[in-house]
Image 1: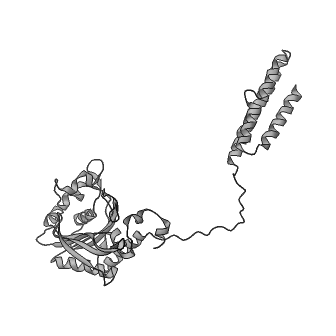
Image 2: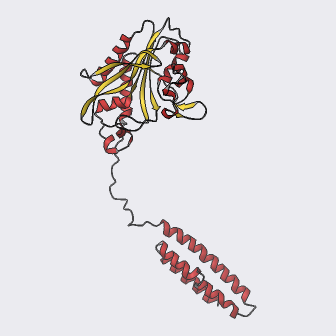
Image 3: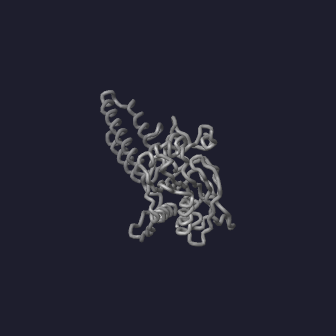
Length: 326
């Protein structure tokens, strides 16, 4: 009987080594370890042995079972890890990795910063998660203003929110630094807009602030028109339309002519105006001594005009064919 146990072990190990895939390993388990397998069949022969031989036989069979179960687990893991196809030829030439490129928005931001830098503007930064004081109150936006409606903002816990404009940065700068000031801030802003060719729920703005003695609307117009012609060329068509914003008075919209789906049309780039005296008072600046202008322009729309992009959604779809054009 001992020789039969040894023979069964040798046959089982040889059969398992020949099993080359998970299906063959499972078939081996059924044949040797299953409820009607060969190991179970040999165990049933214990009742035919004399009583004094049964303990030794039982010990040998238990050891065999443990050995085959361990072999099965090892064989199952090996079969699962085996490659499904032909072996990899490491001598085959690889595909050369193409060099990455900076995203068109990143390039546009750097170009904008460079143009305004030549005009004497330094760069300031602020948080994207803001409080209502910096996003609304300090900007002279009253509690009942439509801009504060929950359907037009991304509110978080408490009075925290994702900023809806980079104007929050001018408030933080004026809180921390006395005038004169001449800064721009570039960053993401968030509004739950319906996505279309010119709107997206997350986009980028460049905010500008100039605060000094004797600053007028003429200075604002000069800066914006100089930027447009320095960045887009002398043929750039820009216009300013009277408008209203709680944080500027007087206020204006800045439009630029751009091609959308093959047609030239006026597209709003952002808003601007003279800083409202209430905003200056909110941050402790005397409006009788200091005046200033502010503007906020949409960077995606600037990029669309500069690079002939007809749909803002292309900038966020991560289509490599589109991105590699720039």
